[in-house]
Length: 205
Length: 205
Image 1 (cartoon, rainbow over the protein chains, first blue to last red):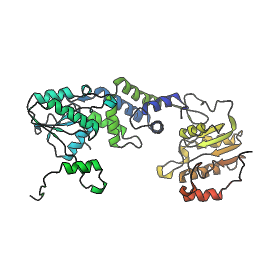
Image 2: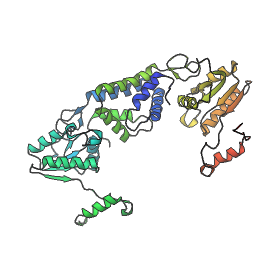
Image 3: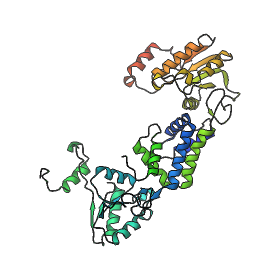
Image 4: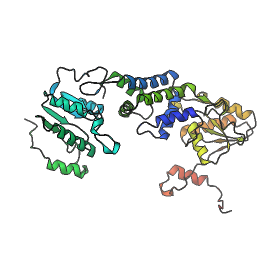
């Protein structure tokens, strides 16, 4: 599939195929879908995306995507300012917020250290995190990064940077997901969940 | 996931999630990807899509997507003007062109009859097809529509419309795909492939 009947279509497919997870066949399907839509609707679509990139702001404190200089979470007086949860990106903030279990603040790294993809600590909001912690006021940093080699590397890097600050550094619990069968859990997770066993708590109390 | 930290992001996710096969989670992933791109690149992306919808032309003869009034295939003097292959959309033209087995012209219906989706013959380029055939000059119409109920319905509709024209109407061969095992072929295809058996041709000759 290399000769489209129209260079306009070809350019559009090229652009759509740049999106992650979208190959040329899907890109063509999307382009044909857009061609069937109302002209005004497609113009809105294009303009919304251009506007998103042009006008987006990042919170000065936590670096999360925000419409204001300081995001809603950081400016919420009810939040525990002593608790800081370090996450990869805005999706993790959404996921944790949806649990309704966390009332502290966030720090969005905007990525994790990945030599394979050429992402180093300098590309992330690491400096801002270190400064924030050494300013005082923070009691605990919770590392909530992916359970991958890159996530572990980033965890270790952050730990080294913050070690000398007098705070506690924790990671979110890893183990068998609630509702999962032991039989179908991968060996690494199961093995670690035995090593990192926790005292039994009586849920009734 | 309903409270994003930014209304700009939310609007962009809403727009991206309108694309077929893209849910809100994927839309968010795409929006975050676009945020990481260069501002100029994202502007190009948006403008390309708007331009595609605004400036696209359809060939006056075959209704395929084209940059000119008459597409490259229709204006190619080497093509057999007596042979007309009826397809659903531009993707089928690309697929057939890639086989290098067809040297006739196309007629793009821009859809197939589908009562479920509210698409009737009037929404397609059916009138144009009928006019083209009754003008003469065409010897054979090849129906190359999907092997679905909608495809069969459309085939039958076209057959009824063109029946009185003195031309031959054929459909592309249906049967077991080259390289497929009989054992794994579905019953309907296997059953029909026996009913529609063809005389054995000696490939060596």
